[in-house]
Length: 272
Length: 272
Image 1 (cartoon, each protein chain N blue to C red):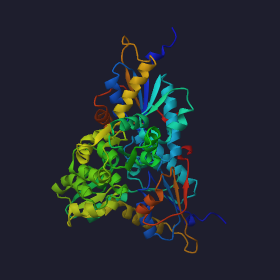
Image 2 (image 1 turned 30 degrees about the horizontal axis):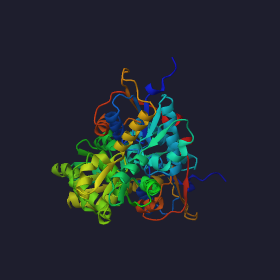
Image 3 (image 1 turned 120 degrees about the vertical axis):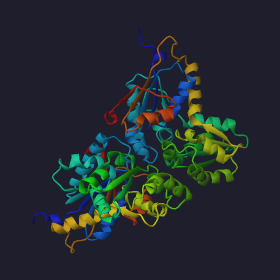
Image 4 (image 1 turned 90 degrees about the vertical axis):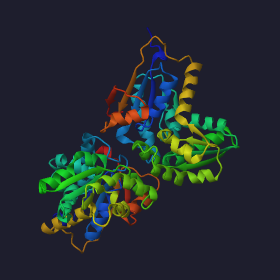
């Protein structure tokens, strides 16, 4: 029998474990799909690297997933979506969905006063990709972008509800409060873990947009529109591949994925 | 004329820019020496990676420096010194000095009550290398080790004297205060940038040991003992090589080196 495309896995890649927040949302919205996740833990974070390096890493990550016969790829990494996706999309014969576009569309839908904030890594913010995408779709929206480099290490260190995290969030976010945004895009896969602190600092009137969830919702729609949902009769398999396995790695996976996964394999990504 | 060994440069490598605090101390104590620095910015931090990966990266870093005809190598990276140095030392025909041994020796000299604290990255602390080296030299010393993963991003973000940094330092260091140490080794090249906060939290009675400075002092002694100081007549050249050049890189270099350097070249370290 010919390869039935709909039963092939969804491929997700990220610079590390952050993209597991996207995988968690995909599992929540598409519990029947097989998933192959690649986390480039051995070379994370991509955020502070040059555009050229991020493009090269993204190519290798995609080549790896293609070997697993995936039907669709999600670039769960904001840095990749921001600076590399346009380039690598044209080099491969597969659909690749980034996290920028779903987050941007959702922000436009939610905002009532037309003032949207974006927070992310230095690379994501420096690329201006969220702002460009929002303004391409609706030129009337005013976008305010801000890099918050300490949020990633704080999330990884489990500093979710500490006083220090609130102070740092205040330091970072006060400029966004001052400009009266009503919608804030969490433009980094790690940030959903700090959602409570960010919500507390921003106040009730600001709607937080979780790019991970918006991406999973868009993927669901795309699969439905193209008849690509997996048959329910098949067993569901989730596989996790990483370029390095540091100490305490399974705890970190648990923190970001929200559940345990036993199927973890180390691969040499530099071969791709 | 034959290659005059004493006039060859000193090679320093690190996972990134942190080792520039070691370079700064070498320049302060040996202002006449030529230096070639390699910073593996494209693959930093080494701290959270597996031992196997750190060894492989260290080999490549050393091969790169050997191409520059260096007379002596400093592994300025605590993670390398902790988990890779013993292995790679035997593979190359050159002296390699890590930062663990000088820091350990200094701590023994300074401590009066025989209770020494060590702070560093997860990899450095997990390796237990400082404790082993101190107890190899003096088995009566009690060593208390503690990983402080947020100190590196705080230093890179310029959070030297913020309230949040003090709170985080308190969180981390209270266990060391409770056990009554009188000496604390800053076992990570980034930590000298947070010296003031750490000193304030630890109080007057605790002596801070800066591994960077102790390493520069040991290098000075080794060069003197072996007649390897460079002739004063020669021009002094400092070269900086990196595996990636992110945005704002020269500001980061300035923060860690304490001075500007124009001679920055990007190299592909995976070729080594």
